[in-house]
Amino acid sequence: MNYLAHLYLSGDSEDLLVGNFIGDSVRGDGFDVLSAGVQDGVRLHRYIDRFTDTHPVVRRSKKRMWHQFGRYSSVVADVFFDHFLAQDWHRYHPLPLAKYSTHICMILKTRLNEFPERSRRFLNYMAGNQVLPSYASISGIGTVLAQMAGRARFESKMEYGSRELRRCYSSYRKDFQEFFPELRRHTEDAIRTLDQSSKPPA
Image (cartoon, rainbow, N blue to C red; front, side, top):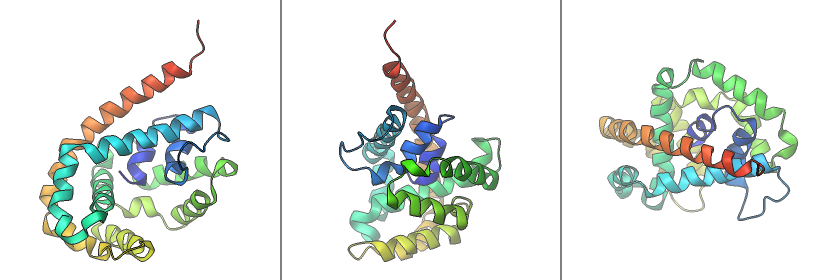
């Protein structure tokens, strides 16, 4: 899943929100400088990624687009699923997506001192360009994927992502609707486990 899903799945915990947001910028076990709660957020980020990457429904999505994107199919599928989350946002959260985005960016900006430089730069870009609300449109997804293609180390063809989304829109939407409720349940279970493990013994 991409940024919108990671943020949403963090629930109401600021620490989990921060850790989930910076998760891609924290390598290996090198997060000892982070607070315990933010470390849990990084662990949650990695759990979400593992669950997503190994799920048969997500593999079905990646197989459908593999001819176009190859090794980058996982990245494209993550962005496609964020699109469908943005499309169905009213089913998952009481705040409109634009207001949610503003609210989340305000929270994250209060914790910038805990961010790796890469995450700090992206937050400023995300807040200034309304990136999360843009996920709701196919053109917005096209822009996001074209920017990713420009940063990719190898030829990715991600700039053609919006074309692929249009080509099999109903199939990708069906995959998301089948997969996301399961991811949500498993993530909620993982958060409860983290909560229990962080409590001091009685």
